[in-house]
Image (cartoon, rainbow, N blue to C red; front, side):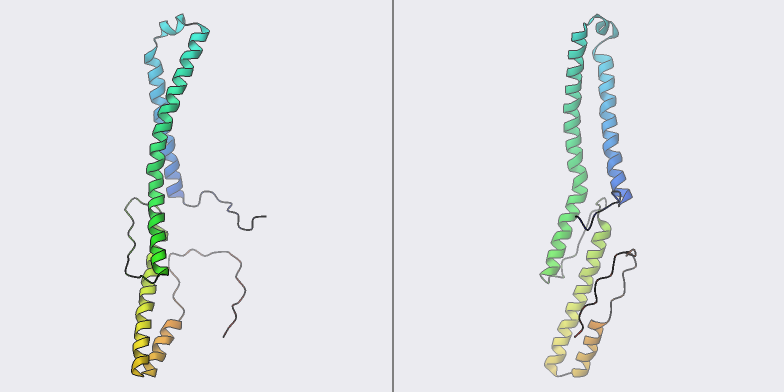
Length: 183
């Protein structure tokens, strides 16, 4: 039994419906071109003179041509649209891996029309927080090396202070985990 099942499939209206509408618009354009081509490839008189078998073969050829045009066009469109998701996903993965490795110098940049910008902003907030934390740890190390225990205590207080919640984070209705063991 799956414990975490996603029941809502449209979770990002703008990107999901925008992508779906682009695909439907391209498909409608292909069908319109095919309908116009059928109208002008064979005249009404030529279609009337064709036998049932001839009309059937003509429709098979038209359907095959429409399939080929649709497959090529939608394949190119799929690569274009998924690039707007896959590119940011790769950039986000690299940014998170850099943070895991302790590299806080690398800023995350997404292009203007990329998706996943909210995730990118959250990762950038995390990078800034980790950069600040790393600076405080260096200051703590310096204070301890100099024997400044009061300064070290202040830095530790700042490190242990609860971080302010991000303003963009929507409230989550998940069960709270069991309380962690305290020291």
